[in-house]
Length: 91
Image (cartoon, rainbow, N blue to C red; front, side, top):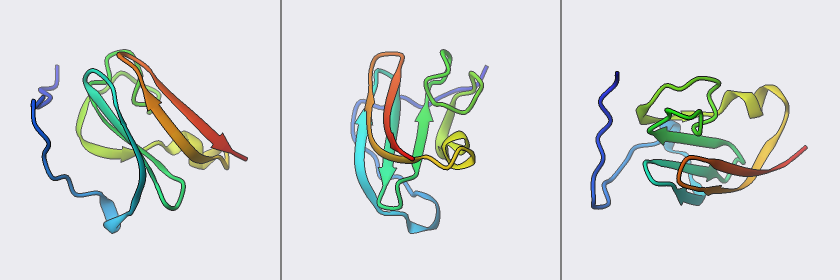
């Protein structure tokens, strides 16, 4: 089992390639951001697949959701729930 750092206060985080964030949402134990380039990055606790990477892996580091890229979909908005992540996409 992976150890995931859960903090009760904001912390600075480096996104790959100096991406600019246009939207963010936080669930109980995970976070998701939409970039200005309409990509989705997620991190945190992934036990129920809420990070969108096709597995139940948890991560302390932001990872791009490759499924959206592979399907030619662009993330427009994201909303995280307790164990879920909802994404509005553009084709």
